[in-house]
Image (spheres, rainbow, N blue to C red):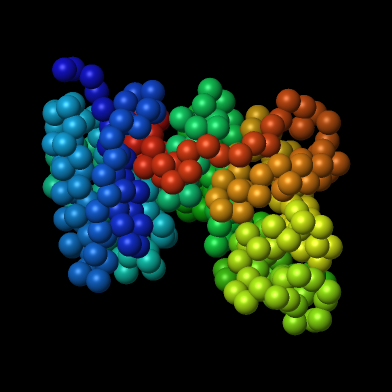
Length: 316
């Protein structure tokens, strides 16, 4: 068997997901094992290497067929060097991840930010398949992002390209401080955390809303209430959609992507959310920058990270 394969690794704080992809981005096999962050970076690196070898051993392929190993990790990185300055979830500090894993695996290793990697997964083998230029948003606890131009991840000078959640887009009078230290970031209104915060504020103000009777408000509760006709919840979802649409209008005149892809838990609101985003985008974007542009849901779900990590090798 001479077919070349690539291995993708998505490192999370609890588990490490490993996958084998072919050259077209098809996910052939997956394996998941514990990260064991409490045992230190040396053990985590040992686990990554062990899981990468194990998944190939469990497959019909041989280690000689592995073209390379791609790694997605959250943190502050020197991407070209594959050096992790700091990863809070993993307790990594100044870890030369690429060098360590190339020595252990005796294969080419590429390391990138987890949001970039997830975006590459969707662009390569998901909702962006066949599209050269797309921008991906992930709406979860925060707002992550990734930019793919001419089929390549845009990293920027310090690896900070695609930090879409930290676009300062909310006007000063409405802005609150973001976790990054700045005010008015997209993340403060369009993430699950932002939606929950706005809902709790409404309840505390005494607004008439069914959310008053929800003990632990989640973003899904707000979206469900909005769909059911709750006016307060509808305003919150509309605000989240409004600033997403405005941010895309800004991105459109800078990068002119063909497709915006939205994933993450909040995106499960479906067309109720997407139509509002598209409406704001249409009203806020010059005709030439929106012509032929689509705003669509992501399709790979939790596999986007591992597929995109493998894609680092193919798309290098």
